[in-house]
Image (cartoon, rainbow, N blue to C red; front, side, top):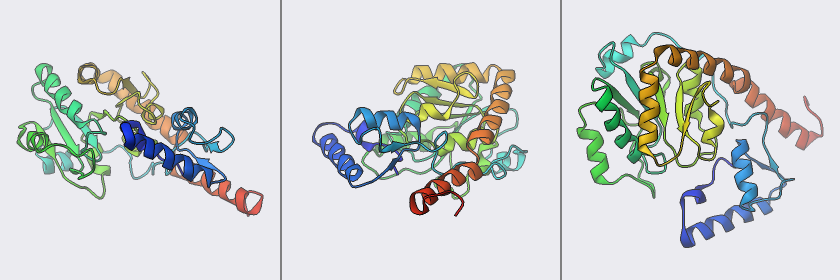
Amino acid sequence: MLRGLKLESASGWKRRVLVGAERMAARCAHVVLCNSESLRQEALALGVAPARKLVVLGDGSSNGVDMERFRPEGASAMRARLDLPDGEPVLGFVGRLTGDKGIPELLDAFDLVLERYPRCWLLLVGWFDAAEDELSQELQARVADHPRIRHTGFVADTAGYYRVMDVLLLPTHREGFPNVALEASATGIPVITTEATGARDAVLAEVTGLLVPPGYPEALAEAAVGLLGDEAKRKRMGTAARAWVGERYSQERVLRLTTEFYRRRVFGQAGV
């Protein structure tokens, strides 16, 4: 199961080692399941495996999303818990706080958004991951000390946090297929993410959200400002997002396609 390519954000000898490792693993496999079409295309372009081995089930995603758990509903209790005043817009992020997730650009973009919407908040639901792309102490302090940022740390159940957001921002540099984009969409929230591998599969551009180039805080800020200033568009995108995810990425559908695939491989037919 190919859920992303770490080599995309690596360079030099490290990238060569990672390319070799991916090719070796794929050579030992009969099938390489890619959890998004753009990931399949990238793996093919990099020579990870031949086209006959690279497979995407349905429309992608490894897990799908629980449409009932991530349903839209009132957020007043969570707002009070987070000390977010009613009526003030909230931009959100869910995931590891690292460089590959685009947190440095997100912080720069948020400061640009505050020039237009000084009462806006940024809700960061996630933790400072001590990975190779971990944030510097300076950036971590910037998050902790910012007067308009709420940072939760690690959260086991994120469902309630989406409901206080007006827009989800995911300025990632690489993905397989981001679950958080599906969860936000299922909650009826438009998503702004990047054109990076995997991420661009998680949004229907101009229908369920917006796509921007990775690594450009100005583009991210412009997209966020545009949606914050158009409530009707946000609601329209949120409604379309929940319908789109429900049709293509419900957990029931994704897991059914997966189990049927394995049954065919093992038993030679579906439904055994």
